[in-house]
Image (tube, rainbow, N blue to C red; front, side, top):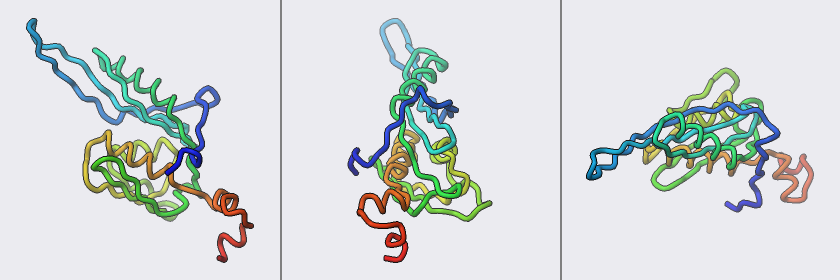
Amino acid sequence: MTDANVKRVKSSEIEFKDKLVAVNRVTKVTKGGRAFSFSAIVVVGNENGVVGYGLGKAKEVQAAVAKGVSDAKKNLIKVPILKGTVPHEQVGKYSGAQVFLKPASHGTGVIAGGAMRAVLESVGVKDVLAKSKGSSNPHSVVKATINALMQLRDAHTVAELRGIGMNRVFNG
């Protein structure tokens, strides 16, 4: 997967909604006792084809979430959505996590688990069948889902890349 095919988006142009996927408490034992800090993975999206994720670490949960949102707005991608679902089946992988996205008919809803659901709802997908295999680590699942979304192509993009007309894309 090359970055040349991925459309990056500027965060200043769009209004985003953020979703907290997971918070992790980290304990560091020192001579003076225990020091707690928090890491939060956050997904932001405009529910209209733009999504990003970020990781924030801080001494307090709210500060970690704020840093995560800031980081997520720096890593935005544009995703093609066709009639409220994904244009085609796609597999995404990251580390030990593997996700499978499949288009669904209108009215199906988002059939996906925790971390995948947050990403798919943030991007604006209304109907999709999704399955997570392998690792259930929320960090890996979010990154695998983003990987699958980055690989999605709509018919116009395919026709442009191949240098052919739209009718040839569908009729072969």
